[in-house]
Length: 197
Image 1 (cartoon, helix red, strand yellow):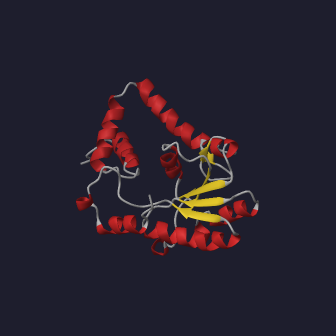
Image 2 (tube, helix red, strand yellow):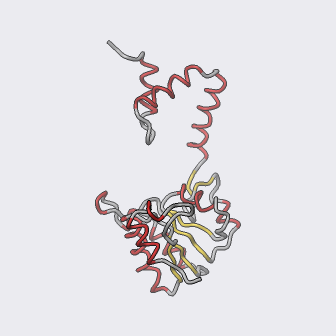
């Protein structure tokens, strides 16, 4: 006996393809859709189609855009480039309202365990941007995990010999946390990256 009729089962199956959505959550989403007014479901479906149809990657930095170039590449200081793993990392940095330069999105990090090497991410494109001239600093803002650190070290080895300043985001203890609850690795990194006052 089928647990779900075919249209519901199909919708649940589609929702489970999203990251972090298990069977139970997918069922809740499906039931929510069933109970929504038709106009809301149509608007939801149109938003999905629109984002797939109209969003692309910026031809320069690799961030999300609707046109050939993103707004950041069109309007910001191009002498400082912040290198990030994914477009969602651009949003995280932008929320600080501190960075005034441009970005370079790698679309991944070096990960031999996942068969991802330097040629599988957008490192060549970064080097091409540097070769065009005008870039004075590259800020490496990859995650502080093994893959992010390996990627940052690899990019540093390629960029530093070109006479470009290379910096890395500081890592340390989050504001508002207690030292006693900070893991050893974070505390060690905070001590190593301490700054003079």
